Image (cartoon, rainbow, N blue to C red; front, side, top):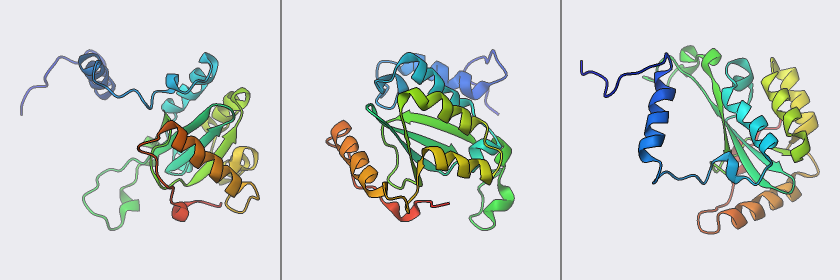
Length: 188
């Protein structure tokens, strides 16, 4: 076994490695998806940054791709990262799931072409949204989150919000924007 390329100083080697890579590659990294480029206030960015630390049940209840429309500021994407013991087989994948290790990632802009749900929130309500996500414990909590911030496919606001999302996406990414596919859109 080869030795690691540098001496780790913490018990979080992955985070430490990414931090070292950020320092080393800083000048060439793409910062397009950084939250501080969202135009949100520092308290709004700080509240959203807490989502990157959500792990376990709360993260496993969030669909894979959530697009968040922040009124007056544009779009964010919340990704749910599913943990697996191994991915050696596509069959019976649920038996390899480790939901206690699921995490969330929040990013400025649109990531992915298959949103599972839209959330719509004002900047003032971002702390409430983040708190609601952090405190998810079951499907009932998730349903309450959608009742307050979500736009289900059956909601009369769905298509007008879809139009706003696509217009914001095109404005923010004039070259790389595209059409969003709603075939995986969740209506729970």
